[in-house]
Length: 283
Image 1: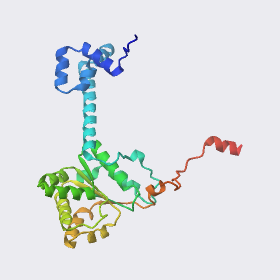
Image 2 (image 1 turned 120 degrees about the vertical axis):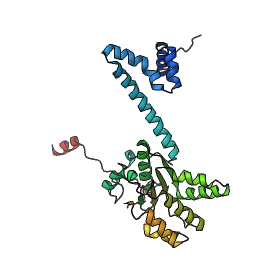
Image 3 (image 1 turned 90 degrees about the vertical axis):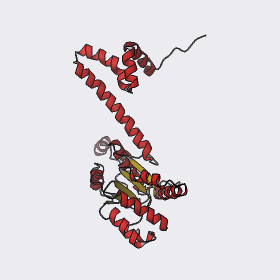
Image 4 (image 1 turned 90 degrees about the horizontal axis):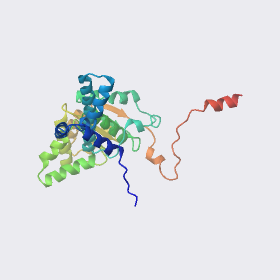
């Protein structure tokens, strides 16, 4: 009977490292959570000996790898905590799709200077032009830069606060909304706000004002937000703090989702002609 004795490269490398490292050193590295050093210390020592690297250079190599792994773990935790509905970055964005968007302005926002200013961002445009995509892309960039982000649809935000009042955990819910460096509220303004929702939204805006950044997306213009509130004075105060000094990104164009419906012609991106074809035609 033939047995399967194959071992994965990763397990084999770990076993080789375990045999090469002194048990005490291996135990200390594991206790400290220095998994990269534990896995690569022996091979890095052998390479340093072959190439004549100094001790500090050897240590720097291991510390650099450990720091990179720790950074990747932190980014993964922040991305999970942000609760993005989809994983969207600018790598998947088609600048030629919207009829109107200030590309220079948005690329400036991707540098995240607005977070240091504690400024807000408002994405305005009709349904389906990519507001959620751009909001997620900004949030993703913030997570990678070390900022804490929370993404919520507007209806989910109000539902969370309503539930918190029912189970007497309002303070905890508000802390969850006030703590992140970036709070993304998607699809704001789809429905009118009742008195409780108007008050809750005002409180969130007031507490975050000049302390952290808030990003809103909406298919209504800012002037159309005021009638959504139960109290127009409360509305004016909230909007004045939130939007009037914010970076406003206006997007215009046809709904991308509409073009993806069955039976609808899909959007075509023009492709450059092949130089070879040009030569054949002119030959």
